[in-house]
Length: 381
Image (cartoon, rainbow, N blue to C red; front, side):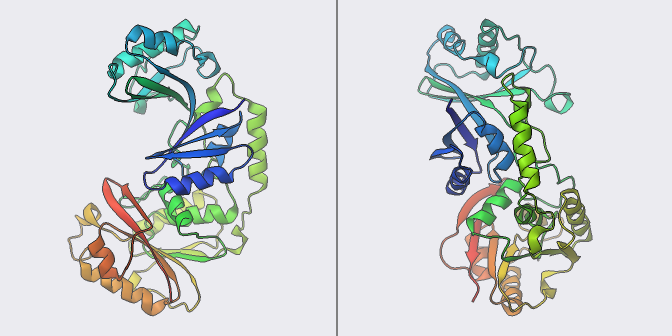
């Protein structure tokens, strides 16, 4: 059976995620891009493989129904034709994520009641969540509903917690970058473990771990759980087969990849080291307490990742480091010490990028922590 699937993704990385989805092979493909979403097709085990292996997607959904409705009774009747017993176990709590535009039926509460009734008509006893998620012992199953001009698409969330939650980052620094964003940026600039990587403002070490996972060939979903294991249709044998194969492919040594980081803040260095250890990274990935001004010279080539503090991240420290002169000084330090290295620069605006010496257009635009960010790939000499 061919499934229709949807990957919820960071807006601005549609091409990156679509390419990664197609790279999974095994019948997964026919991607179609939308803002913040990629639609695609795949076999029965596609959502197992996507949750296990995709580094850049935020969530994987399976489309289970599509219909037009203008009244609640017709909406419920159409929804009741969906084989919910395949996806939702009896006695489950079910939450609803709904978004509608130009629909007569738009109230989330009403749609939620209609969904619970449709499940009942299929013989599935389900209820709305009885408590807030933070206090719930078991995460509710989640249904995603998108309505446009009275036409509704219903999807089941297969992931549970967002896929950026790899399980290793228990300690964070200021305004940490999501793991999925870090992975998408590394893919966007074409980094591979054959190339050295250095992050002189590594914070909690997200770029270091994501690079290390690539070097180890470790799939990002190996150390976490997913909501699909509670589907009545869950094939435990197939899932264990996929996990075992992925575990056997891990190169724990990192195959000699040269990945290093630093930060001037002692707390960030401790957090990064602890996260690296928790993620099972090879001991060769080192993190030092050092400022960018003390960057060591290297005449070779590599990728330097620079995600400087900016905006709200500096409110407690004043504005001096956030000034344009600081960006110019960082650029000078890098070009003096590592002139042949490429730089992946994250900047909140064009003024900062220009102060750094950037020309041309950014390779990506996205939001992190509520702030608009542009990413620039600055080529070495």
